[in-house]
Amino acid sequence: MSGETVRKQTPPRVPPNLDDYDKTYEAFSWARARTKLYGLPGGRGLNIAYEAVDRHVASGHGEAVALRCVGRDDSVTTVTYRELARSTARFAHVLRTLGVGRGDRVVTLLGRCPELYTVVLGTLKNTSVLCPLFSAFGPDPVAQRLRLSNARVLVTTAELYRRKVAARRAEFDDLEHVLIVGEGAEELPGTVALDALTAYASDTFTIPPTSPDDMALLHFTSGTTGTPKGAVHVHGAAVAHYATAHYALDLHPDDVYWCTADPGWVTGMSYGIVAPLMHGITLVVDEGDYDARRWYRILAEQRVSVWYTAPTALRMLMRTTPRTGPYDLPASFDLSALRFIASVGEPLNPEAVLWGRDVLGLPVHDNWWQTETGAIMIANFAACDIRPGSMGRPLPGVEAAVLRRGEDGRAEVVDGRVTLLQEPDAEGELALRPGWPSMFRGYLNDEERSRAAFAGGWYLTGDLVRRDADGWYWFVGRADDVIKSAGHLIGPFEVESALMEHPAVAEAGVIGRPDPVAGNIVKAFVSLRPGFEPTTATRQELLAFARRRLGPAVAPREIAFDQHLPHTRSGKVMRRLLRARELGLPEGDISTLEGTEGSA
Image (tube, rainbow, N blue to C red; front, side, top):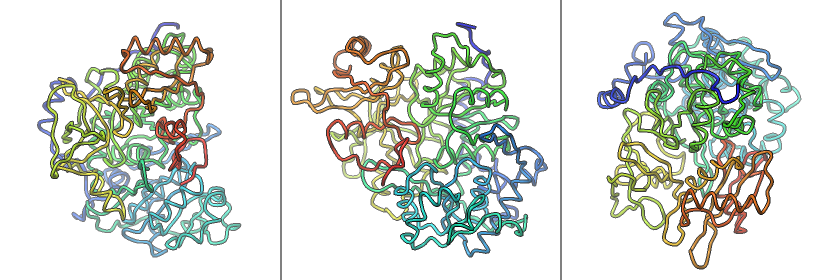
């Protein structure tokens, strides 16, 4: 099947064209979006868990499949919305029996198992606060987040507790209860088997009145300096979760949806649990690890129609199936149900967009958001022609701007004011006008860093972008990653994207290396595709290729080969760590480093 696409692209359903996007944008209001949700019966407020589970049962869709769980052994089990409503009610009763109530923090340290979904939604039903942790964290980052969150309850497995928590249990003054999923609690002093607590709990639960401003979720995000920051999100975020999943991911009630992000991160929570369940669709849950053949098989056998994944995952698939063909691996699976692919976690290189088009028959729709925004803010919509490499356009209800930046690369703030850049393609810091429902309400117990995130009536994202004449946004880099070389400000993403268009390059990370003449020169760290060798000839070819594509002022002056570039758990190349290692500086917080236990 060399040179042919696997399937034809299914025509997008909404919005049908760019003109309708503009009309929708003008007519949209968050107040109108709120009317799409039910709210708690009797006008008692808004609760995320009710919107994700109970309202579907109340409206007669309780027998619809909510979760389709694929085990490591490829066995498949299903959970209906009615079953999920009952299990989450039982867990809410467990919390109530333990004296855990409104605002108390419940931390999860679990993989993608069915019990995770019960705990997440049962916690929210109880008006407690859910704080998810990535199960691959090492003991130090787990301990740091348990302390910072003031956790009262930890839900985990015996293995994870033994490896990552038990030896340091005495450090956590607020931690009263450790609930063990599965077997092994009897061998671990100070823990209780979750099954033993839920066995006799009632499977009906009346959700207490919940204000949209009540704290619901606590997500930790690492800063460039200092301890991790706990971003606070509220139940009212449900309005944004629901609306953005419709506009950015094109979700419809008959979809089978797969989000590959781990629920220990904000993407896996907002769009791996909350948003799809609010839309009443079937959610695929894979307990296994990444494997190209396994992923294609899940897409085919589970008839996935909407797939939300990460650029890193796409690049790994690209290694097994280059865009030049033949497309033997994906072509051996029936992917005809797949109609929409989206990506998030880091900027999507143009090559990945074109790979999706040529190999899977569907382009990949990039979108942009942050832990602090709580929901997708900028996206390439289903009906809009994709501009490969672009973040897309702001969602309805989202007001974005480009702010003039100062010498440090961040937005220039003078007497509390900022300057908006109106001219096309001017580079500056991306800012958002506060007011969307899923905006974080600050960093937990950290007023100074909370205040620093806002200026002049805008939320400052720390991302540098440019906006073209048609309103599409293009990622330039993080403000602290921008390279100033011989008077030029160079975004590493642009250099990385150009390098990745060379057939030898699998991935690239770019930093600025201090230079006594230029201030900094651009240095690239490159991992090669199979079949290419890290020779002097390869290095010279890549340098010449980049110089041709980018010009001498922007192209890298140096290239180092590294088949093991450091990544965050969400798949981003850690430029900060590359820079620290290059310059012999302290590595700082590596708790989000992929492939290690990490340390805080």
